[in-house]
Length: 169
Image (cartoon, rainbow, N blue to C red; front, side, top):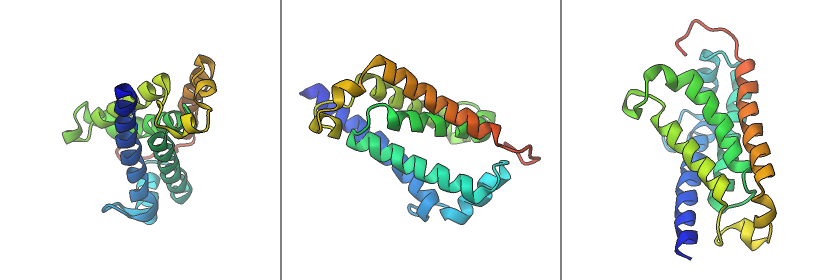
C-alpha cells in the first residue's frame, strides 16, 4: 500500500508538471508562450511549419502528462514523454551543459528517468489501469520495450524533419 501511494505521488507530480508544460504552449497558461509563441520558437529551431510542430508538441505533452498522472495506458505516456524530451534535449538544452540554471539537460534527464521508472514498475493500485483491470497486460516487458522504442523513434523522426538553421540550437 505504501509503495502504491509513493507511485501515485510520483506519477501525479511528473504527469501534472509535464501536462502543465504542454499547456503553456497550447493555451498560454502558466505564463507560457501560447500557440503563436511556441510556433515561432519551433520555427527558429528549424521545425517548419512551426504551428504544426507546436500543436503536436503541446498536445503530446498534455496527453503524456495526463496518462502518467492518471495511471492510464501503461508505458504509452512515458514513451511519448521520452520522444518529446529527446527532441527538446537535443535541440535546446544539450548545448547548455547539465544544470537547469544554465538551461541545461538536468530537468529533462529527471523527467526521462521518472518516466522510464514509472513505465518499468507500473502505475500501482491507485491508477486507472488497475481500476479497469488492464494493469497486468500493460506491464509486459515486450510492450514496455516496444513503447519506449516507439517513443524514441518518434523523437528521432521529429529531429529528421528539422531543417538546417543558423539560429542557435
